[in-house]
Length: 162
Image 1 (cartoon, one colour):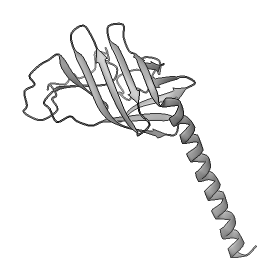
Image 2 (spheres, rainbow, N blue to C red):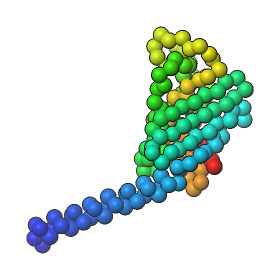
Image 3 (cartoon, helix red, strand yellow):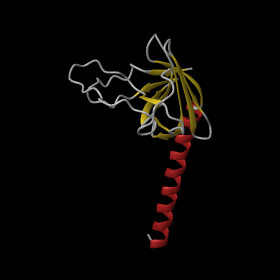
């Protein structure tokens, strides 16, 4: 086999694999775009809107406050990854995820805000931060992937469904 033929075969295999990956990513993206309800706990109503332009919008409502987030999303293999964009206003920040109840967890000693040394005007409007927050798609449901080593790694604690 000549070098030209070998190079041509290699390029063909590479092109086929690239197209296949893009096709798989496209199928997953088509499945996740749209509106989702978040099942986290019985006290909050939470919603996530995944847009076709790789942006997302989150809204949460509880009896004490409301929270929101905007940001960008991407798909890595079978996993949706969300990253928030910090707003320009001063707000209290709460990270998205499970709240562990283990005794060995160190509690943060600082109240987080969107900017250092700012004082939010209200406690009833919070910013929910998504920082490399991951969800795995299984059929028609997405499951939150817990990354906190102090929490169990069960996928069924937080789910997104339509």
